[in-house]
Amino acid sequence: MDDLVALVGTKEEAIKKLEKIRKFLKENLDLELNKKTQIFKSTQGVNFCGYKINEYRLKIRDKGKRKLKQKVKHLTKQVKQGKISSKEAHKYLAGHLGYIKIANVYTLENNLFYKK
Image 1 (spheres, rainbow, N blue to C red):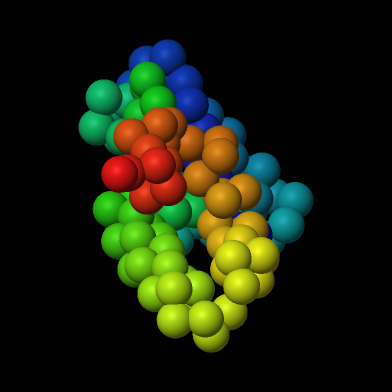
Image 2 (cartoon, one colour):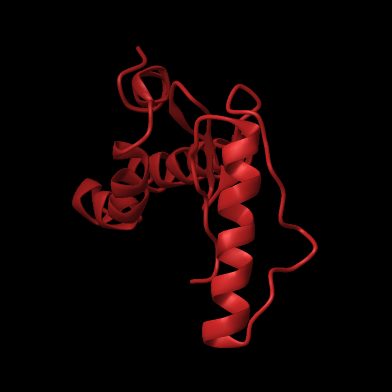
């Protein structure tokens, strides 16, 4: 993995930390940061590993939500048609469920699994 998010208190601190990281990478590993390297305000948030991270919460990106909803809909249909068992459907969803457990997804979970 070569992605990194560093959370700091101020823009000045972010600039100093970024320079330290650049220096370490160059001197110790002969590596350079790519042009995508950016500093964001914490209120703006940052996309990282399929999550949207800001100063208050960790959310699943909209693209990830759409894919999960499609998967649940597809598996529900297959279970209703008798093509797979609910136990098999749960196996397919296990990775997704682990992924969403660490994010703030109360509403998403309720809409996907407990909606009447």
